[in-house]
Image (tube, rainbow, N blue to C red):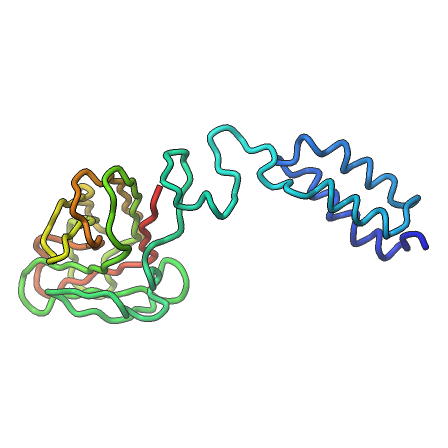
Length: 235
């Protein structure tokens, strides 16, 4: 029994897609040849041939300096340019502001968002003070490990402006004391979303926990800001 037209209509686009993938350069001729020969092959022969030709295709011919896309590459920290998964839970505040805290402000869910359907609104409690949103993540960090952190920020509508903001990460010991801190230069917030990013490398031993912090050293009474899509990833 040869391939019928319906089967060919399903298989041919898949073969064309695989053959055009940049990471399959070495296998394109053989895959194209198999596609041409499908009409003369029985399914019991053609399908195994297709599987053999395309096996391991992703990452077969990676671009210089890029990750092959294998699961073992994520967060490898080998300096090869791969970026791991987001280490934060509830980074987009789709579960409200749960898991996040502020020692000097009130946290509420806001319908003005950058991604998803929610953001976290951080407001002063009525007096001028430092205004920060924070969350612990990960475990003990090792000397030499590199990370990249980012967050989307803006001033909250119908509220006082919170002015300059900083994105930072603290490395804490077992007693919650600072081992070292990293921060991005303060940025002035506006009524539009803007991304703040920073990268850092662990320099000192003794880290038991990392904590991301977003906020301002001094925020006027009545000021609020919105945070969304926060991420910390290991390089």
